[in-house]
Image (tube, rainbow, N blue to C red; front, side, top):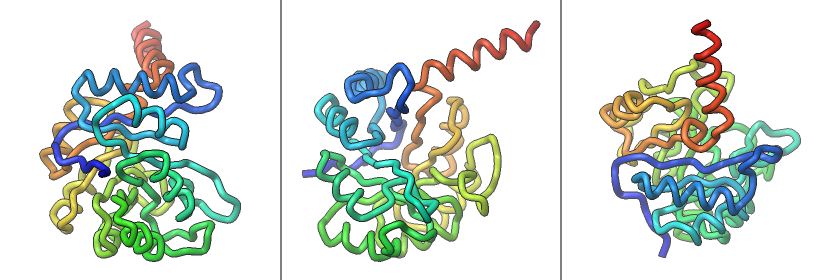
Length: 225
């Protein structure tokens, strides 16, 4: 039985990329265990090997995705139905996928993909970038809507800060739970997003990428003279 996330709180995105010191399933599983010890109510993981390792390591729900660049499409978060099914088979409780209306590399529409996943009783999180995309995903029957892609599509709000206004608009407009994700790095922003109506907030690099955390401190030292 796959697990839902029913609590309000923090989900930690444990992702590393090739060439980084913590790249690899073992490191991400240990990072996930540390996040759960700190109180995370769920983990978001990328890639089949990492998803499998993380699922074995923690008892909280795992949101799985597979980032993959495909020729002829800007969609890269679990871009095809086959990717989504592979993420599910790797053990993810919830499948995160691109929830925009952009052309998908397998030729299916978002509606086609969601319909097939729901037919198989798979829990779906739609990563969207605008209010219109969120409302459409809700109409399709997804289980969560996440603001992950706000600022990462050319037609969405561009900002260095998290899009808490989008969280608030979606929370007022749809009946499915709204997830806040994207550029969250400060506890006060997390609280603001929860107050705006998010069920939970996803934080990644601000917690799990020590090289970037170190850079922030070094930059502050240099700026201070």
